[in-house]
Amino acid sequence: MVDFELSEEQAALREASRDLLTSYCPPHLVRSVLDAGLDVDEKLWSRGARMGWTGLATPEAQGGAGQGLVELCLVAEELGRAAAPGPFVETALASMSAAWGPDPSDLAAQAATELGEGRLKAGFVHHGSLTARREGQDLVLSGRAAAVHAAACTDWLLVTVTGDEPYVLLVQTSAARTERRITLDLTRSWYDVVFDDVTVADAQVLSDRPDDANRWVDAMAILTAADALGVGQRLLEMTVGHVTVREQFGRPLGSFQAVKHKAADMLITLRGLRAATYYAAMAFDAGRDDTTMAAAVAKAFASERLPDVAGEALQSHGGIGFTWEHDLHLYLRRATVDSLVHGTAAHHHQRVLAHLKRSTVTRQAA
Image 1 (cartoon, rainbow, N blue to C red):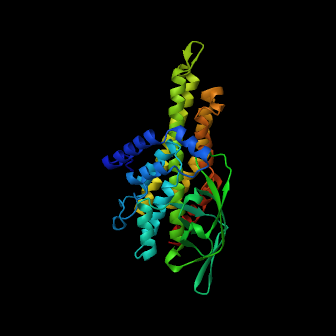
Image 2 (cartoon, rainbow, N blue to C red):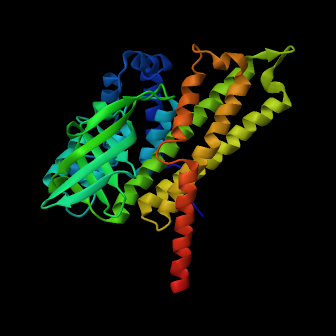
Image 3 (tube, rainbow, N blue to C red):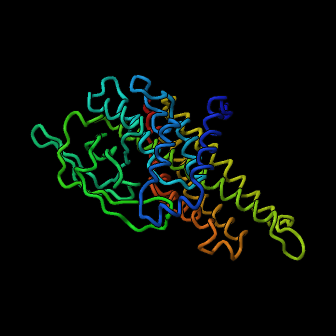
């Protein structure tokens, strides 16, 4: 039996994060960042760093809080609920990975500290077309990666290569080329990152083991599911608030049975997503063998069902939900992109299937 109850410290983290975002990341701030063409609001970034978000999972030896992915998911959920811009979770994950392992290099340990303190920012890069090859004593990284959040404002890129020669790399953003893309999401900036035969020093190679590369891919999928959960929670709150005050035929919309069913369906979906996401995060922190499958299940569930929640919210709002002035569309857009980045539902279904096949083969061999 899995205990999904939060500890006092975790509940305090969620409450403090929500309070900060409620006060300092209202929708008009999100719109102002969009209008200015920025990747992040620096004041919000500083406040989040002081709150400890970026160093939440950094080991204490590098000045962090030494927490796990569950705590990062709590922050990611609140960031999604506020539609907040900025690579907070990517930076926290890069700091965590840079310090991870029995003997991180001096460069990696320093990067972990600086990222954890929020002095530097990081992005997460994973794409099947990336290749890393040895040329003499050098490792050379090539290829194009799509959908990298806020890449232009980052200092480091956590790069996972999961092909025949897997690597986890810490690459300076200045060594790559970033190309901004116009996407449906107006709350975050997205980039293509191009590596034109970038030489990577040995000190920047965090790991060359397949399991390690997949570990961080799993972590990012789980964190994206947590962001989607926060988006969905906010969509439900907005929907309930609207149908409570909006009247039709002299009655609040929320008094009609069909509207109640819609809200109930949204709630049931979000509870399922919460269970899948936090089970995956707990499996990650515990180093369980089923982490990859749990991560794939959580992200596939988010990719399949969050658009349903968004659709119910839009229908319940009616015509006002289609307007630019209403904030609903910010969440609808973020929900759509969350369902696509870091693996679609079909992609993660294939990961679940591959995991089940491997497990079957292992049992048969035993």
